[in-house]
Length: 138
Image (cartoon, rainbow, N blue to C red; front, side, top):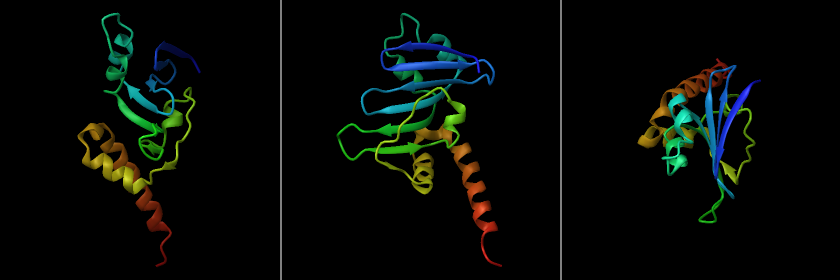
C-alpha cells in the first residue's frame, strides 16, 4: 500500500496511490470523522489561504462519525460500512452506542448534508433486505 499524507492541526488527509482514493480524518478529543474526499480538496487543503481546512474536508462524503463531546451521551454513526477498506490508515474508535442501520438510513434520507451518502445507503439496504428475504421460511 502506497499512501501520501497531508496533515494539519485537527486534520489529516491521505491519497492512496494504488486505489486512487482520497480520504481524510478530522477531529480532536472525543470527536472523530472520516471522509472520502475529492482530489481537488486534497490538492488545496493545505494551501496557505485556506483558513479552515476542516470545512473544506467536510464537503467530502462522510464515512464514519464518533461523537463524545459531553453535550449528551456519546454515539457513533457508521455511514459506510466499508469505511475501514476505504480509509485503512485511519485509527478509529467507537464512542458510546453505534446507531443501527434503520436510524442511519433515515438520517441520510432526511438531511441534505448527507445527500452524497443516499445512493450507497440505498444499495446497502437493498442488499440487507435481499439477505433477510433469503432467510424467511417459505
